[in-house]
Image (cartoon, rainbow, N blue to C red; front, top):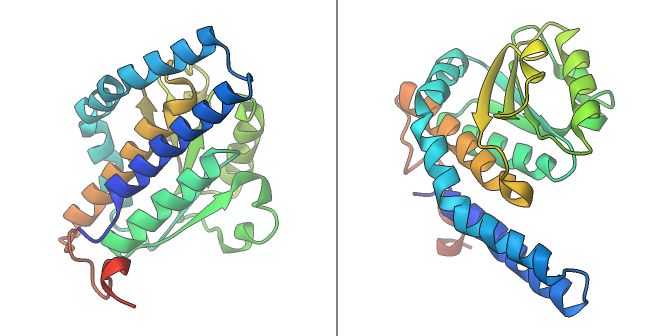
Length: 212
């Protein structure tokens, strides 16, 4: 199809491998750490299968979103590009206005667009960004919208802050972005399918490699 899902995922993996190679060449990554990253890579397909097995939860959230006029995606650090990708896929195939924002910059414009009927999808990982992400979710909820959190299955606190959660497998390390992006891509797919949109051939779009 026109929406590049496999391309995005493959690019993340290639960049991860390049980063590993550079780290090893510069002696920044030792043998033990490299071995752990390799194990994470080997486990990745199983982690993605776990996401696919939880598709009913994604379907439930898609049903909540299908009639929205506008949706925000927010993330911090490495999760910000995932928010951009999630929003892009949704707007491409479901024709719902969606935008990705850096959670730390919501006060600099995005809050002016936020209404009580604007769902917000928050990407929450258990790392150095966690506490600030929870703060951002609180600031969003204070303005009325529902928050859907994409969160680690080991996160026992997020349900206190979000209205709905979709969980990704724990212990995915630096590769947590892969199951997260699969969740976001599936969410866009299900919303588009519920709206009877042309998923493989979105209107007015074409593969960039086929046109100038």
